[in-house]
Length: 185
Image 1: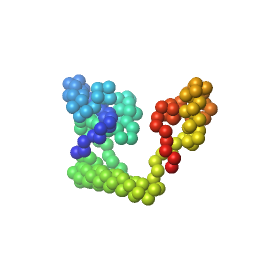
Image 2 (image 1 turned 60 degrees about the vertical axis):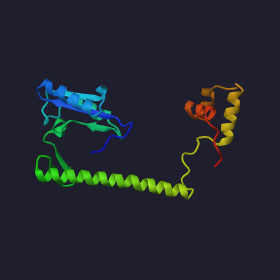
Image 3 (image 1 turned 45 degrees about the horizontal axis):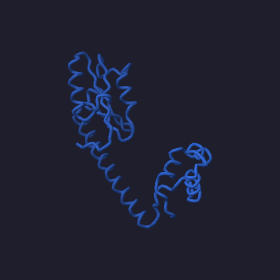
Image 4 (image 1 turned 180 degrees about the vertical axis):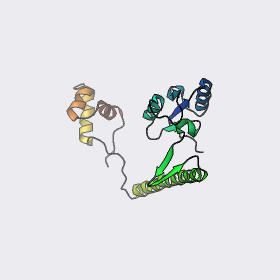
């Protein structure tokens, strides 16, 4: 089991068919897993095989984005009876072979993802060493940046005026004025 990276947001989903107490237990478990209370979405009165009108599930899925973690206390809380299709093959979580295959597939996918991150870091280090990775380039050339700093310091124009004139956001102008001067590349 992986620990969640710092800054990662967990989105929780709880579902109960009839027993309100079960929602309380699931909510407590989700809180214990690091899901904040405002990120827990609940469906009441639905079996795991029903997909229609599950607003809690719809809201939970809408709240996830890359690097967030969709969290349930047990797989059947999310979707009981769901089959997994990979190409023409269909696997059942309830079948012992299907469960073994899907868990193995998940481990291999995680392993490949970890290798990919390692390869990316190695490639970036090599590119930086060879002078090919220079980082994000400034939106405006240094002469324009000097002019912006001078004109703003002399009180000629506002941040908004400069942003409009140079077709950049006010935050870009703010960074140019209040940030460290960029070094020539």
